[in-house]
Amino acid sequence: MEEKIISIVELGKSFGDHEVLRKIDIEVEKGEVICIVGSSGSGKSTLLRCINRLERQSTGKIYYHGKEIGNAQREINEYRSRVGMVFQSFNLFNNMTVLENCMAGTRKVLHISKEEAFDRAISHLKAVGMAPYINAMPSQLSGGQKQRVAIARALCMNPEVLLFDEPTSALDPEMVGEVLNVMKELARTGLTMIIVTHEMGFARDVSTRTIFMDKGYVVEDDAPERLFTNPKNQRTREFLSRFIAG
Image (cartoon, rainbow, N blue to C red; front, side, top):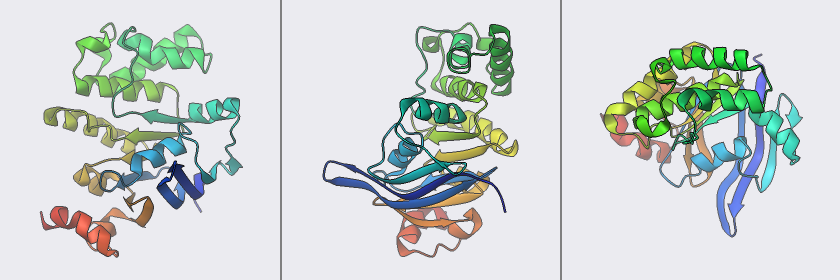
């Protein structure tokens, strides 16, 4: 049996009277690439933010290697250093160069030496094709370049799991491919990834599991070859109908 890294049990999230997530149960095993798809407002991004503890769930529990993640900030910070996140809007520090962006977290959170932080940053920037831009400021980069720097920065922390919140939705169409290619390469390395995406072709081709969400529920959770060709649920079929027909 594969090792369970994250277990989500009966997770619920409400904002006031609005119930956004309802009784979510998901287990994440080492090396899985899980794509979460669904229409806007289905709860996908809120689920990801709860997994990373950027939002506190209203009900349910999140376990990391069998240990419940509580509400103590120190505990959450330690967990986040192992479960990284790449955001839709890049979230780079605009007053720092590309290199400084990639070194900041490892120096401040992991307390590694300046030399090791530099080596890690250069290695990961090379891997995403951004090494020539180490002295550039974020304002000098395209959206696709910013997102590749954001991915490199997350990788510098040596995360065990990397979460992606619609990483291509803020990009111009011609820049989407360059970011998806970086993510495909990461998937091949065996990194455990959870990806909220609208890119159905990417989800079908790269994920080891695809989760379809609707109205705060996990409606279907299956291998992509089954979910995309023969979904069990009527709502999943409706959502994927255009894609399947194409």
